[in-house]
Length: 107
Image (tube, rainbow, N blue to C red):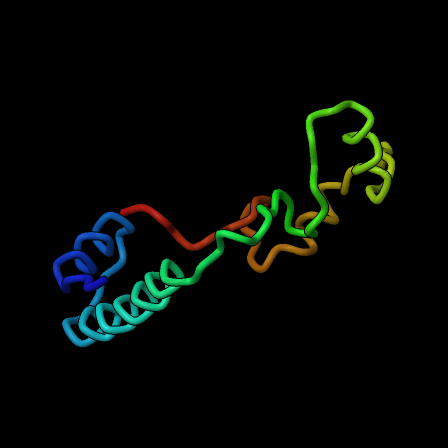
């Protein structure tokens, strides 16, 4: 699938990302290669491959017993004390007036 430079620029504008012409061209080429790779997957014959419903390969059904069994590998929910404000601020990269300061994301 060929993606146009205009498509790249449009998506960049939606994401509020500024691109130079060189960056837009490079992204156009890279994305076209990625889309071509995924398009090649359509040529693979999967007619005899069972569907995978879970990333672990285990089949999950809607039966209650099966759901309970599939959750055996998960830890039990437990109430833990939350981080204190000082602990949160200690982990912050930048603090201003007792608040976490972040880089602006909107114009």
